[in-house]
Amino acid sequence: MNTPLQQEDPQTYDLIQGEKKRQKEGLEMIPSENYVSPAILEALGSVFTNKYSEGYPGLRYYGGQEFTDRLESLAIERAKKLFRSDHANVQPLSGSPMNQAVYLALLQPGDCIMGMDLSHGGHLTHGHPVSHMGKLFNWVRYKTHPEEQGRIDFDELLALAKEHRPKVILCGYTSYPRDLDYAGFKRVADEVGAFTMADVAHIGGLIAADVMRNPFDYGFDIVTTTTHKTLRGPRGGMILTKGKVGNPLKAVELTRENLPTVIDRSVFPGLQGGPHMNTIAAIAVMLQEAMQPEFKEYAQQVLKNAKALAAELMAQGAELVTGGTDNHMMVIDSVASFELGGAELEKLLDSVGITTNKSMIPDDPRPPFNPSGVRLGTPAMTTRGVKEDGARRIAGWIIQAVQARTDSVKLAEIRAQVKEFSLAYPVPGIPS
Ligand SMILES: *Cc1c(COP(=O)(O)O)cnc(C)c1O
Image 1: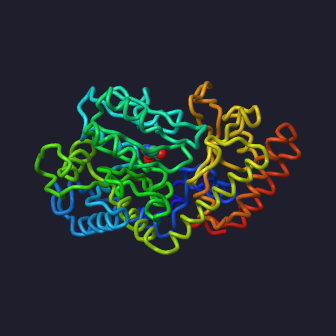
Image 2: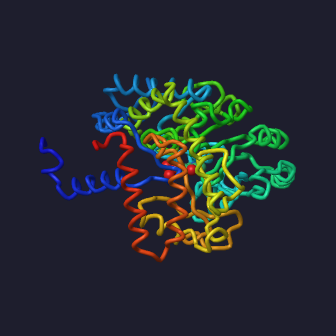
Image 3: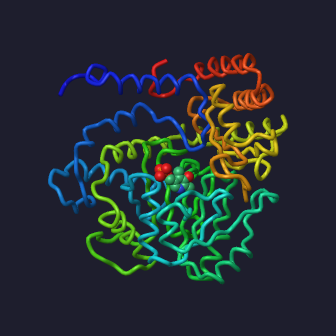
């Protein structure tokens, strides 16, 4: 039981080495990805992975919880402070189970919930027909106006809400380059008596740093966020609520005030068993990092880099969905810009060491595995220290790669430049 990984399992060891090299030598432009600090890696690899702790601090079904109780309470207190919520559940195993726990807490099978249309930026867990949640509930979708900078028409939303009487109005996105008008959603929800839920999985870090709007400032009931995107922590999810903290062992009525208890009971025992305590340790560290002034600087730089990247791409002929960005991401309409499908552009950029992902554009006529767009984001490169001048160079390589798409010599040259650039910005936790 004491053999180092390299000797015990050289195959797995080599794959880890390969992934380290890939991360070091390439540019990570997928907007949902980031790099954690060595401190977070250490917490994630800690002996908390050995421990079962079903239940909540002080209310567990197993003994030996002296340190897990203190750890989970620490994470909860930090999350509440950072997001200005009354309660936090830090146990969801990732973003998808976090949203499932909320839906299953608030809705009965067949109940109506409204979310953003998937081709307009909503997430798979927002009722995509292939997901179990899509089959379980009655999803009604609203759209954005890409010609008007992605604006949401709240008169249209209100008309839909009055017609369908949803129990929950969900906002939030995985592929939408603007901030949301939470006050508008809240107004509509109040008119029809719906709960308000914001899934800020992508922008949680930008909200924590107060560089984007916080839905709680507009009276929202529930905010969900992943912990591994702009928040820059381990893979996980958190559910933040307003309301009165109660005893999660006791069943309560579904009211606004009881939301903390209703949600806790939905996560455990409703949906999950033992939480991943090593992940919760890493979440605690992430939250501590997110309270530091350096994190705010990172978040501000993420936005500046996105503006610089978007402006340069547009200056060099790319068309962006909604005509720009107010957050950390942008979607290139690759068909309109270059007559290239999203899958083709993703593959081309992969060949020069720039990792992106294909993405739908609003009302996309093409299929999801080869849609009309590619999604780019700046969190990972910002964590490595890239600034606006670097963002503009990256835009240049993207356009050059498109122009040289059939010229393997030129593509190899671009690949070499991207590698040299990438190596100049070390990845945290990977020795250079
Ligand atoms: C990423 C994401 C999720 C799901 O997170 P996973 O950890 O991949 O399950 C949920 N909602 C939104 C809006 C997301 O972007």
